[in-house]
Amino acid sequence: MSDYKYYLDEGIVDFRNGKYSNALENIDKSIEMKDDWEISYFYRGAVNQALGNYDDAMLDYTKAIKINPKMTDAYYNKAYITLSRKDIDNPNIENAIKDLEKAIELDPNFIDALYAMAAAYKKLGDYHKSLEYLEMLLQIEPQAINAKALKNLILKKYII
Image (cartoon, rainbow, N blue to C red; front, top):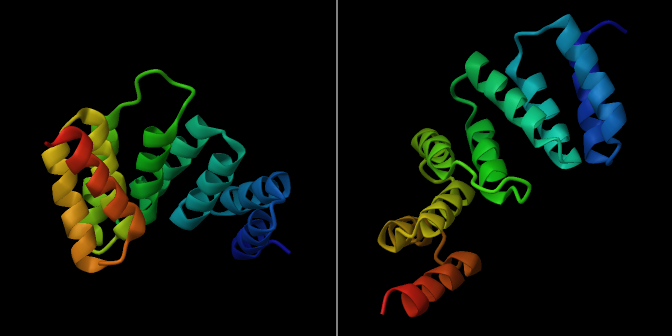
């Protein structure tokens, strides 16, 4: 079959089943057939992220956003990679914040992005800003256990 959607669908199934090399092959075929579809780049980014190929994942998410600037999850995934990487000494937290701002602008109820924003500001030492995002999150999801725990940590350890 020579349909780009078929190869993307196969790649997504492979990805979900943990068959990452097969997923990359299928998604690459999809991109070869249609190189202006953001969904293919997004999923290739997700596969690369799962494989720990963070630089490649960042390139794929960036390409997805270039094609469709409303790719909320691509902004979030870029920020998540930046905030969670252990293989670089000084991740650019400000860039992560910009990506998260865009994700939240596109979806103000994006709980994971709100939590990540709180974590980013905590890393920068801006505990009040971190608390603002945790409060926004808790307004949407009052039972968010991680948000409550982070809020308590910040209040007890950093804001006395």
